[in-house]
Image 1 (cartoon, one colour):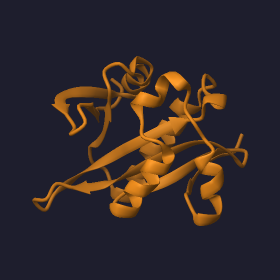
Image 2 (cartoon, helix red, strand yellow; image 1 turned 60 degrees about the vertical axis):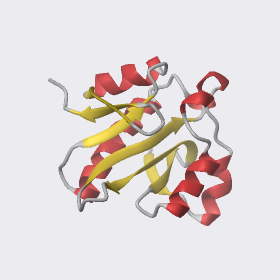
Image 3 (cartoon, rainbow, N blue to C red; image 1 turned 30 degrees about the vertical axis):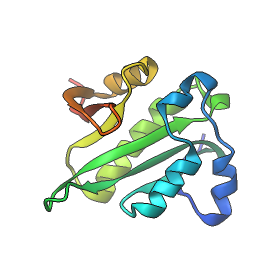
Image 4 (cartoon, rainbow, N blue to C red; image 1 turned 90 degrees about the vertical axis):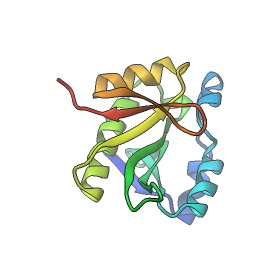
Length: 151
């Protein structure tokens, strides 16, 4: 299989916008359209399509977000696999690829993400990858996790 993370370009936007999570997951992530609007407003975000053998199977957004004090944090801010491709290990594989990509682009530093406590499937995945809760919440009430590695 050929796994790729590709920048969302104007010519690929339509196929990326056709992706959707399962009905029971919609409360856990913004729509791709909302994510792309956020990326227009906040240039720090990098929206990407997740492809397997040239077929779009998911979407993610990451970036180095400033803290307003001269510093910032590296975030994998959004990540979803289309409902038709879930349960095949794509989420885990693409999270691993995204983690490598953000380190390659921004250098070795802590990686953060946030998750709703009710999103137990995502939490299990993130914990298996080495993320741990740090006792903080984002502005939407999601719990923040930091990558600590697998021990």
